[in-house]
Amino acid sequence: LYGGDPAPGRPSARLLLPFLCLLLCLSSVLITATSAQAETPREAFAKAMSRFEALSADKVRGMQREPWERLEKEFARIHGMRGQFAGEAFFYQARSREELADRSKNKADYQEAVRLYSRMAQSWPNHALADNALYNQAMIFSGPLKDKKSAVKALDQLILQYPSGDMVKEAVVLRERLENGSAAARPATRQTTATASQPARQPASTRAGRTTEAAEQPNYGGLNAHGAAARP
Image (cartoon, rainbow, N blue to C red):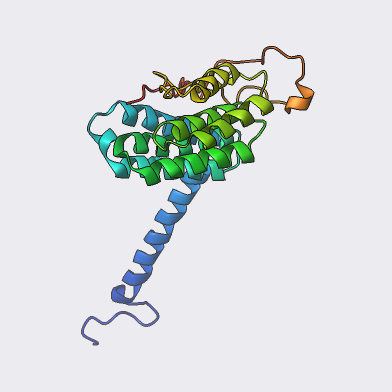
């Protein structure tokens, strides 16, 4: 009688279609958000470290800016999760920027790496990688940025704050070379084996008399994320 019109009380398919599309979109967003929330800081850091190692070894993509910037943002995201690996993530955020700088030779990239290392050392002074951050900062100042005064200042801070740390010997040697006018030679590998699985550093005032610090092998969900990628 009505030429195929829907029965009274039954909505038209054309009216339902927009609501169905909206429902599907909301479901997709919810599934993605749930997946992201289910990822632990350990899992996120292990994935980021795997990408870091792969990018460091990739002679093509490793020379591109965008992959390093994306990786830096990923480490920043993990740092923002404030979990067990927040300190490491902050350190590798700076490392990612330094790796980019080593390839771009851009002064601004080196300056950003220095800024991130400085913030990491200030934000996590008792972390096992805090002295590594200061040492890498000094290496950039003494090398690419040619700022001997700032390099010596960073080394003095390292030596004063972490007298029994694993970087103090390298810091003393580098400081002596700078004072003697020698150019700072970049080491073949970065000394970054300390991890969040290690006990937190104690302030220098409470570590007097200690000659060694406890160390455990790093374990990022089965990934040996030592980060000792060869410098270009």
